[in-house]
Amino acid sequence: DYYRQVLVQLRNHAAVKDHLMNLALSPKLGRKSSDAAEWLDMRDAVIYALERLQVKAVFIDEAQHLMRVEPPFKPVDQLDWLKGMTNRTNVLHILVGNYDLYDFRNLSGQAARRGRDLHFPRYHLESQVECEEFAGALRYLLERVPLITDLESLLLHWQWFADWSIGCVGILRDWVVDTVAALCEEGKTTLTIEALKEHALQPDQRVRLEMEVRAGERKVEAGKARSAQQLQELTSKPAKTPPTPSNQTTSSVPQAETTPAPHSDVPLPKRPETRKIERAPQRDPVGEGVVTGNTTKCVFSGRVIELSLRNMRDAGILKVECPECLSLRGLTPQGEAIRFPSHDSRKTRTPNRETRWAKWEGTWELVGR
Image 1 (cartoon, one colour):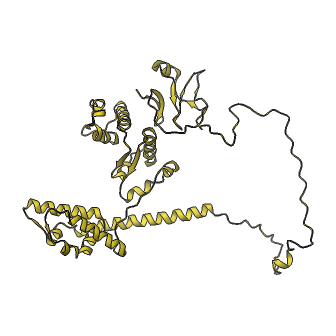
Image 2 (cartoon, helix red, strand yellow):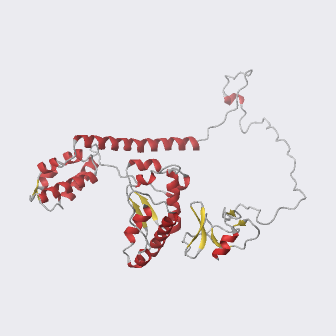
Image 3 (cartoon, one colour):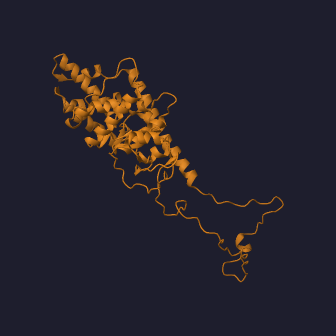
């Protein structure tokens, strides 16, 4: 569904219109697409369109639904897929959603180090600063209403607006827009407090929203406190004290009287002599097996590639993309096992554009055609 929605947004651009015109972007009712060739074509089309149009970011609204997957898949698989799309297209993906999205932020270290959390909390009436900011947002909305409005009179009820919108500007906006739309349909020209009351949330709706928001706020605060505590436990290094033998009693004499001063005449015990270490007469290992402290070799160097030599020769393509650093290497297969050549980690993340073998979701495929 992600591929289809992206293509629907981009297909009318002249630069990609001809390339996308033959794709079936309208899903058939009553079934999910299970044709691998179909969604692979759509994936390649998305990558082409994002690169061709130089898209910088993709906003995914209601992103918490993206994390709801059917077995055997897990939410972390979705994050790995997004990471792969970001690496391949060099396009920033921004996930926007409610507090349910908070549970999926740090499911893996790779996702955690690549992500940044931005929390947009509601306005709270306990804070004077936030009350003033909410009143300013209310004024901004009312000033743009295309009806006759007693602005100052309505602003006197700012706390009532805050209560029935639970401090959320999005709810406040929808409330005002729905009221204005209803008045326009009825042919009325004035926005009144009575009309706003008719289109306010129902009490049960307000209770439900208030409960969900409070639960989400508690989840965020508890998560921060738990993470801070875990970090403190991991980084703290308490001093290790040797156990006291059961037959030994502790002395009540202060330590200053039993421990000699640093500059006293009491001789310090001599350190035991250690045997001198000599090098063995054998030669050191040489070649690619030697790992130095400043090595920049990619971790995929020398790994076996799950490709058959026959498939590579039939396709006429012997170039392979490293799944770790995206380096491109030509292969000269020898024997049955095909190994990726030893190479340094690539410094840039610019996507490769030529035809090559690349690993995508655990499978080696031809891409870039």
